[in-house]
Image (cartoon, rainbow, N blue to C red; front, side, top):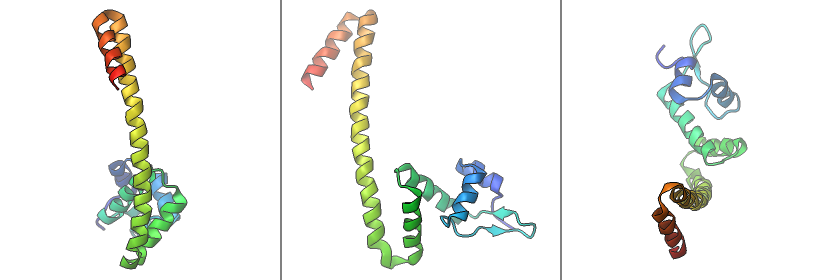
Length: 135
């Protein structure tokens, strides 16, 4: 039988075997084909879904909502408007987090420049203070 063993799928996707089994048990993945000996064989399509689930989870989407999204996807094209709504919501939240992260990064960069200036380059501190005052 073609495909990937659970060990290969786990390594390829960077998730544990437990996670792969969990996704299947919870219905996030379609039942995975099995060999005569009962060993799972993952297809490229299965791994594509695993990647989708990883990315959805990374947006902060809870498992419950991931299940709903998967069900919408399986229901066909009639659910495209609902899927757009779900993805747009998490996109907006992600953009908000990214903006907050940018602000924190700018703060850290400023503080690092100030501290490096104190440490050995007095001009760096002045430049950082001017940059902060300018906005």
